[in-house]
Image 1 (cartoon, rainbow, N blue to C red):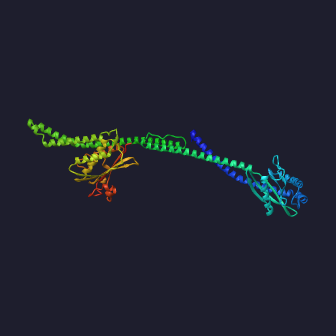
Image 2: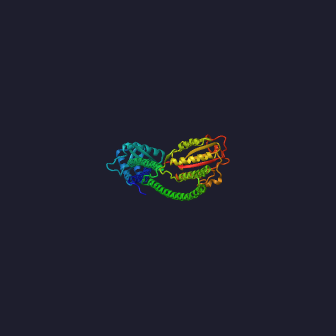
Image 3: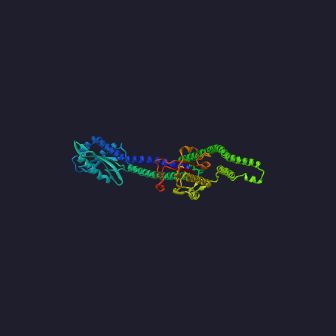
Length: 531
């Protein structure tokens, strides 16, 4: 499957954005988790450090306490510096193993920080005790530790400092004398984490917005092309030569498949029409054979009668010598017989000419309702001895049919005339039209309530010279059938069922009173709609 460059770029961009969004989401979640872990890990570090302070200075703390600090509420600066220098050696040695961690001891009776050290910080380093801004925070937590005789670890912050602080009581001679403390500044670590978090958030948001934008573009493009395909399908419905625009990608595969299917369908239709034409020609030749045989039989009888009359006149002429007798030899009766038979032959030849008359090749849009109304008026004038009534149900949505108007006029005239001749003095007719949208056909139904059509003659009604009328030629329905077939339509006759009612078959408005619903004949004609 091939995609155009712009569509490739859109698809690649969509996949990249989706990938970045997923990665960003997991990074964001990871950063949120790491902030908590930074605090937790550094709390653990301070706890470990404060425990090691107590263990590591246990041997030196007792003698220093006993010699310089025990029992005193106040000490001199010299004593403080001496004790601080001795204890800070142990603190420095222990805290050197921790990065950026500071700590020392707090003695509550003296209310002093002694043994402070911050070995891993860059110069200049604080000389004595924690910085002033942190002093009261550490002092307060150390006193809480002494009061509760427990290890306390809390997170403290003041702009911009953030640090976890651990404090634990220290014992000398079994008595609590103060607290060891350790803390580590984590504001830089958290700041870096927060920056990553903000960047990841905006990256994720940007990726999502860009993804939404590209999705909208893709959806709009697909929707536009689907609308074009739909419009193209509508055009193909009315114009068989129209083809869909062949896009690339999935929709291109669909449009190309539709075009190929349409081409194959048209090819099959052309092949089918060719076969139909061949079959029609064969059928025509078979019908022509029957027609010739029937014509020979029909013409032979009147020709024989005329020939016999002429032979009689010749014999009488040879026996007569008088001019006046020659005139009297031809009787009025004989002349009437000859004229009758000649008219019979002439009428037959005219009917044959109608049968062989080619259908107009230039078919055009024809309003079938106009033809039906015209022939309804014509029928009343043509048969003044009949009382003819109509009920109509014309489909107002029926488009024009594709036909030769003169030929269709001839078919309707013949069907109407047959309906009248099959009826008594009162001829009731129901005429209905319907637009068959699925098959694109016009359906014309003509029903009479005459003597009806016996089932056994139905297979023969379209045969040339077959008739049940005393003076019929038997070519009317044959001609109608040939005309309808040449229009690629159909014509057939049905007999109403015994239990069928007009109201069931037709709308209430088409019901005719005082007639038997099961009598008569229904003629159904179907013609193609003009494209």
